[in-house]
Image (cartoon, rainbow, N blue to C red; front, top):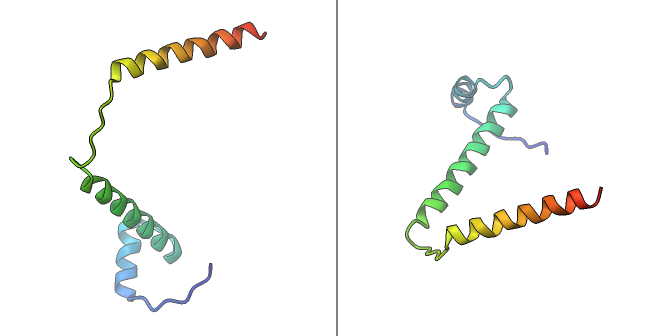
Length: 79
């Protein structure tokens, strides 16, 4: 998407330096991606202690092992 922006030249040069971007577009894409990643991490961090999961990991692991064995058995049985 082509967009016209009025950006501070010094800021863009510094952004290109710190990101090692070859183009302004690449620098902006990297910066936007990083900002989005950090905001998502902040949202996850804000959930700390607010969600309670009552999971029995040993039982879940056993179910997964049985499921994988079943898949292997089916694959070998259909040859």
